[in-house]
Structure formats: structure tokens, C-alpha cells
Length: 308
Image (cartoon, helix red, strand yellow):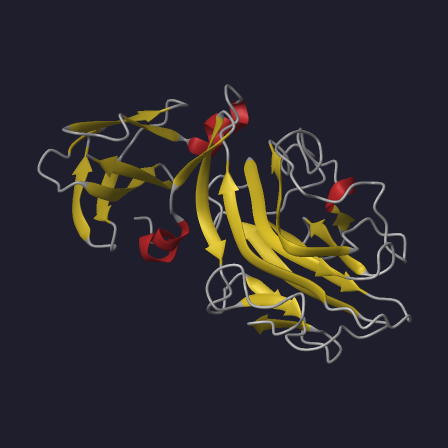
């Protein structure tokens, strides 16, 4: 019997958005209103990253809610500094990991252009080795490759130590989005069940009395890779129709046998279980959002369905 993990995962599902011509499945949002279990701020004494409401001339307040994360909530960032926080991404907070992994966040910046600033690197081996995301070539699509990337730094944007990264002045909230598709598992050298993203802030010895880097509303989402084997493996099953009125059909995209399906409402309340069939009657359920936990072999897959 597969251990029930619904209550650990229900918070990871939210909404489906449309960006361009591709659906977006939002799994989690880091709002900094409370500690996020998959985000860790380095504990070294010199680390300047703090969560709260920044109170500065340019970096004042947060994008949404009361809190965000910033290089100090008050005053200028220090010289000769290197601070970081790390975000862990796995199947626990991105349902389509590792086949489709995207991030979007809002940020502001006030640093010495071409010198101080921030960059993001990635590790697939638990932090033993790291690669700047703009140089990562582990997949068929990676940050910076096409229109899905927005607001990210490029290979022409360098900091004082030669790293590619953000620098200069961006005083209004600006969106950054990037991601990976059909990647991490494509290389035989990459076999990790999670990836680490590390957000760095660095400064040289020149004191400009500027305010640093401010980040908020980190959204983790996926987009289907239409027609690809990876997308089929990532989804595992399709729910038709969705939204539903009277009945839903669970279709296995790879021929896997569906053993049983648990049904929950939006609050996590268990509503029932079906076995030996891939059809579920929802005619008597009130309109709203429901979650399905599908057991197939040694896999459990969570799907969201809307009842009209």
C-alpha cells in the first residue's frame, strides 16, 4: 500500500494559466510570508539576505503581501560581500519535475553597474558542483534559449568577478522567468532526484551606498512539452474532460494500469475511492476544485480537476 502523501502535496497545486499558446501549471509560490521548507538562507555571519519588508529609498516594501527577501532590509549592502540562499526543486514542489521546470519571480535592483549584483547557479548533485544557469546545457531547452525566457541576464552581462548576472538599477518591480524542458534526465551524468538553485549576491570593495537586490513572489510552474515522450512521462495520466460536469475519464498516456483512485476536495477532505475503473461520477459533487490521487504500480500521481 502506497503511503498517503496528499496532505504534503495539496498545497503545491494552484491554478492553470495561459502564457502565449502554452498552458502553465502552477505548483507552488514562495511568498516569504512564512518560512518555506524548500528554501534555505546561508547561515554564515556575513550573509546579508533577510526576509521582511524592506525600508529603503528605492527598495521599499514588497511586491505582494508584507514580506520579501532582500540584501538587508535597511540601509546599503556591504562591500566585499558574497551572500546566498538556496531553493530546492524536486517532485515535492514541481509535479512535472524533472521534465518541465520553470521559475518566475519579481525583483528590483540597485547596484553598481557591471560590478556588484546577483546571479543564479544550479546543481544536480546535491551542491558538489554548480553551473551558472545561463551556461547550463543539460537539456533540450534551458534558460535563455527562446521566448519562454524573460528578463534574465545574458552572456554579455558580467559582474566584477566575471560571473554572468544582474547589475545596475532596476527600481520598479520587474519580472524574470526561465526554465528547463526535457532536461536533467537526458544526460547520463545527471541522475539526481532534485536540483538546487542558488541565488547569489556579490559586491566588490567599492562602497557606492546602494541598496542591493530585492526578490519576491517566486512561482514554480510547468508547461507541457507537446507531443514529446518526456511530457507523456511527466503527466502520466490525462483527466477528460476538465472542467467536468457529470463524469471524468482518467486516461493513461503510456498504457499503465490504474489500480485505484482517491478523491479529495479543496480542503483535503477524503471523499471516496474507486477501484477497477478509470471512470468517476462527479454529478453529485458541488462545483469547485477537486484532487485525484491515482495509484498505478509503484507510482502515485496527483491530478486536479474542476467540477462545473
